[in-house]
Length: 257
Length: 347
Image (tube, rainbow over all chains, first blue to last red):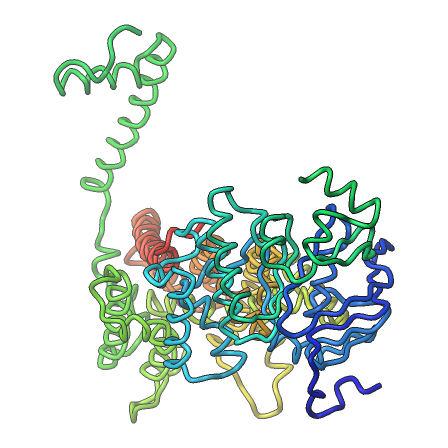
């Protein structure tokens, strides 16, 4: 296999390509079966589906948080299959940012330290430069004044914006969002979605798992609907929300709209 | 109740509170009176003994022995300078964080590590000084040296053991689990005897280790097993999602341990670790039974002097006071560390 051997990845306009992806948990539960998905560079893909449909699992395979048991995965030119080569995974992680439902900021580090941690230790960049860039990123998400506070002193919405800045600090080529607003109070959802929307406007490639229909309508280039570990339907937001093809999509939409 | 303790003048409030707290019902009154009589009587006879009957000569005349052991009189300044350094370090550490410049604050952990070799250099030899044989080391100074040595050895070892115990390598995991379980299953005094007798057998030919170092090694290995469990508890308290965040940022497993897991685990484990440190101090007294003349050992040998026949009570009360003072010092140091880790009101 070519995985991990090619010195530099082929130039490609693809960010992610999964082919026949299988994820089977140790307890035998098949979370993903034969998932084929392509995400182009600069594209914003929103994944929707009922809980337990495998949408979080799918994007977690993209940066190796979940191993895969079958099929093939290409992320930013790096190839991964069921051997889950850790060297390839760590190469992928250097270029992929991820934002979690529960923010997962490091509670023992200040906001600024949360953002500078990876650039300093993973990319080993100059501390001063990293700090300046981190402050710029925090400014960008509107948290500059809180840089020296600790995560527990911030609201959920603010913490999630810090988490976005932290992921952006590695200058990723792909951002993964795993239900970024599901743990937030309703009035905080907007500020986080605004931040994500601004990123999309800058041309960032993103895969977003979310239940926010309004956001998907406005920002997504494509909506992917999953159920029971499979992709049921892929469509443009206009088509998906007004005229879904599959019965299961119609049922799902009738429940959430 | 109709009357609130908040009404009325202050003295009346106090009276009310006392009445409600101590004499609310006939039973409460009986309990209060009985306890007061018991405590008062005990305290009275204790004070009576302390000031009128006890003969404190056994303490006063031997202060030098209690503090420095049998260090030759012309070398006592070496012991004093170390104790002085240690005391200064304690004071600086206990100062409110705001009063210390940042560089000093950063240096503190290093200074705490260095204070041990400095003590050994000052006592043993080095610095062009005449060497003092380890059998002359003793008293409070030796107790402190043993405690510090034990903690500085047990803490890093305990952390490594805790990490090894959850390693993905089965052999390493089994070995550390076995080590921790077996060590915790043995009485400390047995471990100490074992150490004094067995360590020389394992050393390469021609090597010797003095009794003090053998004692520190045995104590360190013993306490490390307990500390490992405290650290493991702290590690288990970290949510899995923290590790996922670290991995998704590309941190290596080692970086994740050092930058994300240990800082959080140690913070959680700190109260229990401080507990182990205090217990280590008390454990050093067992070494009196292995011929070391640390605080308890030197006291026993003073009691062996016919001049002080039957002065056990005075000596042991004095000892209790000394150990208690060192304990208080250690707990306040621990609290200081806890506070400095907690500046943020972290949940």
